[in-house]
Image 1 (spheres, helix red, strand yellow):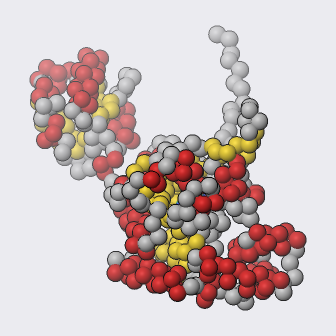
Image 2 (cartoon, rainbow, N blue to C red):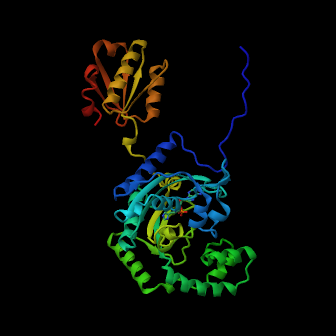
Image 3 (cartoon, helix red, strand yellow):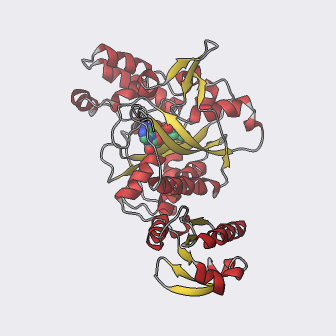
Length: 425
Ligand code: HAM
């Protein structure tokens, strides 16, 4: 036979996250748990395109942000339009709410989404160029009760995963009036600093950005800057007090971080971040806040909203770091091992009958020995295994083994499907 030349295998683009078995089980479990927490509080699915008109992010997320100025995957499509792969979800949700008049009905509009997002960041552990978020948005009301609901959804999601080593930081970025008074003073302060041209330009668009700068000299200069929390209007301060009061009533622990700067420009009022303690530099497992001017900025009515984005990849890392085991009900119910040619037909039909009844079944294919078949059963993490050979066929009896306890019990093959509910409960 002629030798087949092997071509060079290809690799995934740099910095993307991928999940394949066995780790994809954890990914799926994490994503499902986050989504379940959202649905449990009345959020409904919104499924949006992964690419949008570039202008949406420029206007929505803000040109002073790293996300827009340095990290967008932007390209021209075949019609000469500028398209960007979504770096975050909120701007797209608002675009869709405005475009389809979703805010004309009952308020708040409560939606959840899940999918891939794209930022051309420098890849490192927990920071990817394609990553996954589950997010929620509650649009149309400016009540502290909703702020707390949104935070509680995230908190419940983390708790349902079994996470413990994290904490919640909150702040208030103030309303328009608080912000206007504050930025006037902050700009005055910044004008006394000796800054490079790029920093001056960023501060020009959004002076709060300078709190985000990682350079020591700027960090130290900004530590003396005025603090937004001290400029809140009475209304903003009362809103924030009520958020703190409700969080306390719900037993959700938090610390106030009055130097928090979110990486996106649309935030106003309540803002929050969940920080995990075992993840090193990329410790933010989720974050969000209120965005009162965003809808108007994008050409819609002047409605406020609040939401969060939780990093699915980082939650997977957090579960692994905390050694959280997957729940048993995620694995198969049964793995069948046929060890003779004649028991193969029975295995195939039995597997189908059981699947029809909602039992999750897999079986050993190919000509496996008993040992090979049981190894496959072990690897499948199935709760039970069933070995079928000629003796079993002849006697219509087989032994079903509980793979967790090692115990076996005798069953009648011909009635296994009818007894499935009992046996695999
Ligand atoms: P964000 O803080 O930019 O907010 O992202 C939310 C979460 O996504 C982060 O806490 C982190 O877990 C994850 N994440 C962000 N970038 C990366 C990356 N490069 N690699 C891995 N994970 C990442 C938003 O995106 C807002 N849209 C959230 C929001 C919704 N605010 C209001 N509504």
